[in-house]
Image 1 (cartoon, helix red, strand yellow):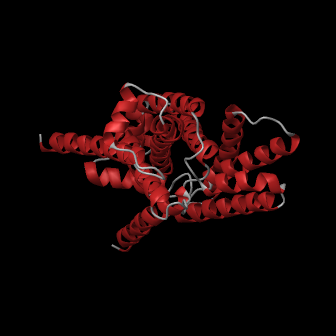
Image 2 (cartoon, rainbow, N blue to C red):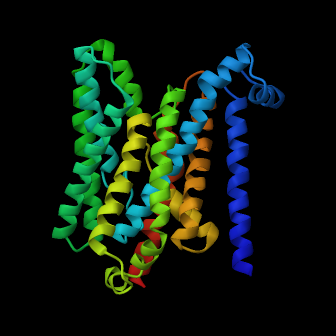
Amino acid sequence: MQKKTRWLFSFLLLIFLTFLLLTANLMTGSSDISVMQVLHSLTTPEQTTADRILWQIRFPRVLTALLLGGALSVSGFLLQNFFHNPIAGPFVLGISSGAKLAVAVVMIYTLQKGILLHSGMMILSAFVGAMLSMSLILLIAGKVRNMSMLIVCGVMTGYICSAVTDLLIAFADDANIVNLHNWSMGTFSGTDWEEVKIISILTGISFLMIFCLSKPLYAWQFGEEYAANMGVNIHLFRILLILLSSLLSACVTAFAGPVSFVGIAVPHLVKSLFRTSKPILILPACFLGGAVFCLFCDLLARNLFAPNELSISTVTAVFGAPVVIWLMLQKQKGTNA
């Protein structure tokens, strides 16, 4: 009974923080908007300046931060379980950097050729880049037994992809550099309702499929042999886990650029809050936790040094990196013990 009370309280806390940060993000910015104006715009939108700011800029942005933050957190949780490593995540393993490189190549090519870049092209290129990076990590995982070495290889892969991306940006046309640079630093700004719709569909379908894998994922947490004995189709399960985690990471990179440390930090913070790692509870909690984390970081990115705006990865790194350091120290402590 005590566990169920804690779980209920934790879910209510995350939901409350989500709505609180949603409201704060809608109200604050270059033009402050009151709660009453936000409510009025939701019920009876008009063509006032406040309505245009809310519906054309702030609503799409906060929904993007909410959905992509949740997607990144769930992707990190899947990768941590897949590799049985608490420090695994899309950014650390270089998956986000691979997706970033692929999108940068497509963006530069289409911009130079004067081709209109559609959302579908960005998602597809990001997915291909993420899958190539994931394939390399899986290849390395088959060669090394030390999981710490796998993380190091993932970080090096990420640095290589980021270096190549920066090189491409450096030689891009001057007219294209601004767009590429802003995207490559990570931001939730600039999305419109059409992109929000695509993000909602992709993340929604992916999350539902992942949630349906809760029971096999719970069995996987006890080891591959145990999962196989419980009737889990290991080959199919691995493929689904890789595809879904890569798709979520690709979706984030395609629309917001690389966003660091969310996929590592949030799942552990959520598990500490709930004091359990059961996927049927942690998956929706991770989604809410990622949404809260990214909404909070985006709020700081927009307002901390206004009118100048920080990249979202700068802020997420400030709050996410200490969690990763703590995890590494805890893992080292456990090894020494």
